[in-house]
Image (tube, rainbow, N blue to C red; front, top):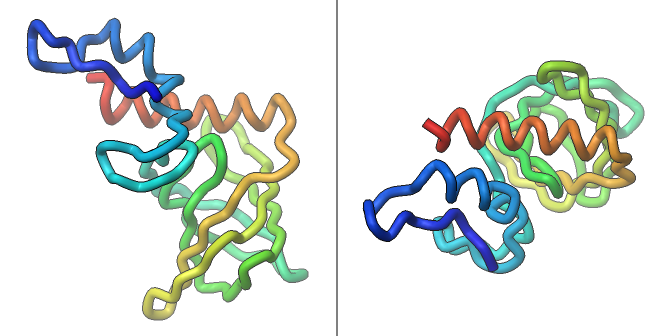
Amino acid sequence: MHYICKDSDKGNFGKREQILNVGRWLNLGGKNPLTEEKRKTHRLKLNIEAVCQGRDKFFKAYVLDISPGGLKMESQTRLEKGDRLKLTVEWKNPLKLEGTVRWSQKDGLHHIYGVQFTNLNEEQDAGIREITQDIFWKNYGG
């Protein structure tokens, strides 16, 4: 497993180590030492609007975090585990994605969902990678 390496001489994260390890950090494979969660990829927090289609209706949702494998979103629309979705996320360009609801949680009047991406093509994979790298550098790159 690889994470961002700490620059042992200076006691902080070195820019070179960040550049060399950002890809590995986003694709963990095991427990993340920062959160102790067992997941295949590290999720990066954000809050952007998405237009979704699922259960034969269109609705808005807010993407709360994203990773190369999926996202967490919040919506007032009720979905069930196993529901298939089409989502359009606005970043630099609209990014159309498909996914499956893997878990759900009620939070007051809203619902929180974990969505696993399905049927990603190279363009979609590159779009997700661009979002995660942009967020990473904004939050951790200085």
